[in-house]
View 1: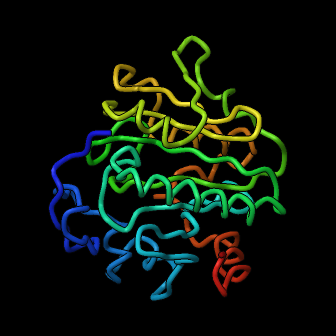
View 2: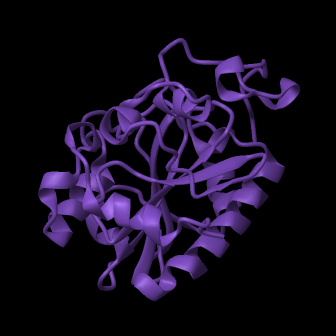
Amino acid sequence: MRHPPHTAHPECGGHGPSQPEAYAAPCDFCDEFAGRPTRFTQLYGERSRLLYADETFVVFPTLGQIGLLYLLIAPRRHIGCMTQLLPDEIVRLENLLGRLCERLAPFGQVVGFEHGATGPVGGSNSVSHAHFHLLAVPAAIDMRRFFDPDDPVCSAPTLGVCYRRLADAQQYLLSCDPAGGIRYLDTTALAGKYPSQFFRRALAAYLGTAGTWDWRACGVEPELLDTLRRFSGGIL
């Protein structure tokens, strides 16, 4: 896997050689991890929504709760997408996702996805800081239904294999669920076909919660507060 040049990024708590070159654009996640005001604090005040944190990743409920339990997993350091993780970090991500899937399983079928973009914002991505979406939905969903069947969607046995194959992609979509496994599509040459927050839009429409897909337009959400109360002692 190829990686961009590594430099420190003080806003994200970077730690020397494992920190890729920083984006010039502001980053809401970096600000939140550093304790600065963000969209979340505008809505919920000076409280933390972090449910889990280790030296590499943090887990927190997303703004725009289109499902029963909807979490984001983000690296502490600023990278554009998960393909820019180091090999050992991908292993940690896979282990963390496995533990979180077990934790969410009692609440419904667990599905995951990523809108990947190597630039500050591009393709289906709306946030410049890499993050993986994980949510529990009330009934089985095969995420393959949301891809255009004419597009060259591929499968992979593991996230590690998937991210190696996408190492040169500037933009991509990735989904995972029990029925369809891990599926991915390099969308670099499909500009405009898959809009910003593509999977969020599609899932919200499918689940009948279409008014919640745009996290930038949401207000205070009871579902997010319920998640914080439910896992007040941490999710893992």
